[in-house]
Image (cartoon, rainbow, N blue to C red; front, top):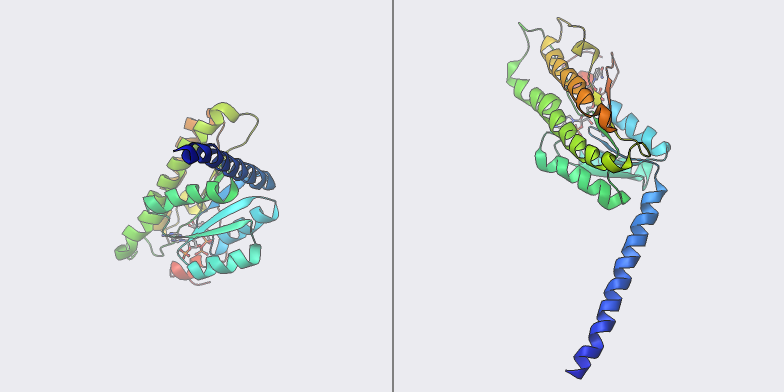
Length: 233
Ligand SMILES: NC(=O)c1ccc[n+]([C@@H]2O[C@H](COP(=O)([O-])OP(=O)(O)OC[C@H]3O[C@@H](n4cnc5c(N)ncnc54)[C@H](OP(=O)(O)O)[C@@H]3O)[C@@H](O)[C@H]2O)c1
């Protein structure tokens, strides 16, 4: 009994020391990076280039894609500023993991989220292969919406206390065919019209709350996109 009471404070002290150590370690890691980013579709093309630019600019980056081998190669190439998280960016659980790993790995919440993962679909309204429509809608619209919704909820909460001292950005990769209708890929274009509407809506919703919403509308960028969409490079 006497031994027990003697051991208790020593145990509590040890616990406190470990807690303090972890807290300081987390603080030091979080100070190492100017911003913490999440980029979906980081295994190829625009997303890969964005992840590399961010890391070179001093950001900690959580990059996602389904290609685990490519993510491992990027971790090797970029180093500790890049954490690859394999998974489908249209799935709720996978998206939650991106936010959790940003905090775990870099010591604070992501403050820039890029909804980039997406795919094309060649063909006009008359000719498009509709057996692929569900997949295209799932990643281009449903997944992008779920990601930006999660980002917005978290960022508005943080910015209530942090704005204007800190920035928060949601970036959505749309397309020029989400603004100007192309008869050659109008079905794909329709998915981009949808995300453009979501971007405009979200900007009006959270712009005044310290969260910037940017819409990027690329034209033709040579990447993995052309082969997935069944287009010629
Ligand atoms: N290239 C163009 O000309 C062009 C023009 C306008 C807009 N865009 C848009 O730009 C964005 C990026 O395209 P890109 O040109 O860089 O094409 P890309 O080289 O084919 O890259 C697409 C990326 O999205 C990821 N992705 C696709 N489905 C996914 C899923 N279900 N879950 C997680 N990741 C997924 C792919 O990774 P995994 O295969 O590893 O999953 C890959 O990293 C897309 O939204 C596209 O619509 C491209």
